[in-house]
Image (cartoon, rainbow, N blue to C red; front, side, top):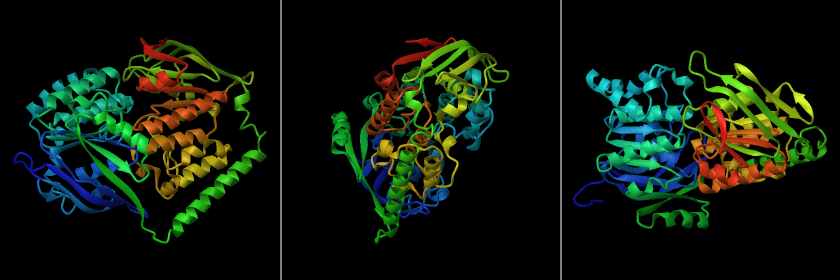
Length: 505
């Protein structure tokens, strides 16, 4: 396709992907040209194949994941599926979904210059860009700190600064603002506006209302179990944008369906077994949470990491069972740290945290708390997803009938994923698997760190449904999120971390 005498920089045609050790083939039916200096939005269902497309464009999928790929994706008339050109690597800056997975260095400044040094930029340009981009992304005071001490939001800022600093002409950005606070999001979008007409930018984003004004074209991903109402609702947002639909199908390579039948029987058998066990163990102490009272409080908490500045000073809170508490704050303000203090993962320097449960003071608080970490991989311990799920089912008896919706195709298609590793999923799928694991732990206090990260509207509605159900059962739930609309729609109280304390909004 030629437009105004120009050849597309990318032309994404029909292609297919088979991941190793998988009996599923992902088939993409699309014809989508991308011209130089266009800004493209890619959206659609979480888990519909957007992440896989990015890995193909960057040349990662065949090299690292050892996938079988066939079909046509052109870069300047060269089919990069048949032969990925080495020179394309330096042209593409890739920001992945997981802000922790791209950090390569232990010190912030080393990570910032990593791309520039890797591509042999002159020292004077490196020094100039250190000042420029550390100022833009508010990292000046963090340059000498260890990267492992950064919050998810600060890691994402650092990743963005490191990528943009070597000034690639093409940017692939996968959910770039998911971990950023409102101020950082505004800064990021201002940077994107400054690139309009100067760089080719392809962005995967579910919450796209703020970016839509600067987007040229939209590709909507439709999978083989698409909800027509959802599709209509999303597409109606693109009334003044050129858009095309990418249809994605998952095809079972086992034509006889023997393995799939076996998996269905195995899942139903275990679901039935777990449900029966639940009925037989009503009084084993696992299901009494909803009938018991919870009082979770802290008084005058002080905390800091090693020699760094104090994060919390005389912080106090007092929460009760049946409450949904939302917590917001700027990147680096201590949101994740607060959840770790609550869960007993780290200890305060001063002050106390107390849990009164069923009129008894609990010493080992962590035994009654589950936590959905910001980095969902922290909850994965087994080589296969079926092992992650079945372990929790057997360990913490729970009425499976109550949570079967979590295993439906629209949320987490368990049958497709049983023989996969959780580490091979997209970040949105990892977050949903982490949510399921935390639910299966069946604890009366549930902590969630960015539960809506990388989720589409329909998935968020299912998460909300279960959070509301746990509220009715008397669970205490505390949610850290940058998604204020989500918190506002579900929380009983929202607190802002400000001046090292919690301030009720």
